[in-house]
Image 1 (cartoon, rainbow, N blue to C red):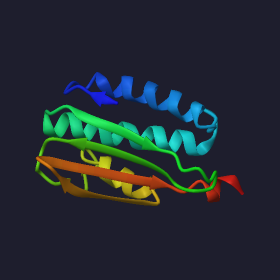
Image 2: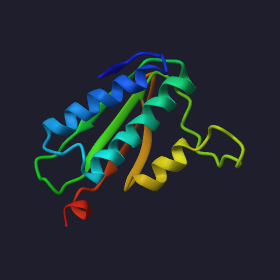
Image 3: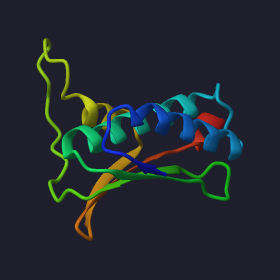
Length: 128
């Protein structure tokens, strides 16, 4: 999904992701769905707010039902993600801490004229 360089696009990205989750067999009320939607919100917000560039959101659903679901957000900024620790009274700066806490794995790599940030959520633990 192409995401414009506007913070209002985050809501549209969540709606798109919710429809993709349902289409993949993940129910909207499953805990993994809520985790994925929160991760998508954070990664898309970071891409749009911190780069000022459009981005591309992808969700990858493996064939095996217990395999991890992967979320990727690519943008045209070469500036790497910079995790930081927000102070108590700061209103921002917690996005990558949240991603680190919720995702089973995450990372990033340069890609073309920009970068791709990804995270994975294991479904196996949720299914048992």
